[in-house]
Length: 466
Image (cartoon, rainbow, N blue to C red):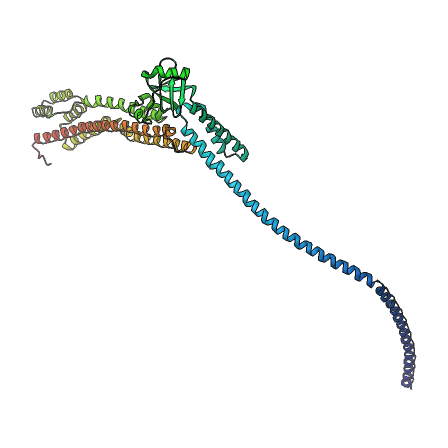
């Protein structure tokens, strides 16, 4: 019964719930229908607004499309113009680079080479006038500091202007003052430059023709027979001048050689140790010559006398005669006589000891002479190296067109080698002769020692082979 009542209660509750849910569904459907109608009304309103604005939007769209076409045409034209401009710019860049390359070639090659050659072509008498400015310009151009091209070009143009002015002066003849070397003496005077030839006068009777260069100064070959014409030409710019039609070959054949002092100065600093070593070697050689030739060698006659006295039992007389021999040989014989009563081995050791003691005294200072003979050529080679370094430095500045500007370095290189050999050859000969003399003295002592031992052995009745 209780179960039946429970079921009935549940069924009643379900019926109530179903009725309540049906009512809620109907209410929700009504609300949805109302919202749909409202949305449709709003859609109609919007559609009407769109339809009303559609013509205006179509017109604006046509206008925008026309504008886009116009801008596209303008962009295409601009691209074509840009391509043309790029081609022109590229051509201008090439022309600019070509101009820069030509300018660099003219500036770094042609002008530099011209300036270097200008120093080589000027007359030795003109060196004080132009060389400093030329070398300053070359040093300025080759400086590691950054300098703009315009500054370098202006400095080069100054040298070009200077060279043009020089050509004009040379063609018309020019008189100027300057220093010159005459027979190794530096004199101040006046030069007359006419084309490639220059003449000099010191105003005191010394006149001549410029012939090369010494110590960066014009070297003058004297022409006393033409003093009147040269002095008149320089003073009044009118006169008779001698001309060398052989282009310098005649003067080269008769030019005097430089003297010893000039040669010494051209040799440079290496000449001082070469001369110092040579003087020391000569002094030591003289001392050793006197010392070695004063040494008296024991001869066979003295040895025979000593042996005869020993056979006769006259040891004191033998010792006195040995002392009279003197020198290293006499000292050795004295020691031998004093020990003549000892065994052969003892006498032999005494003799050998005297020879060993004497040999260093005879040969002292001789190694120094040998060292000088070996060192002098090396010092000459050092001078050669330094001279060539100087020459190559000059080549970097003035080029290789004219050897006169390189003469100082070449002279130093050759002169030091010459003097190194001049010192080495006689020094080597002196060492050989003195060493031979010293060895001869030692050899005579050895021979005397052997003869003494043989005489002692024979005197005692012993075999010579023992």
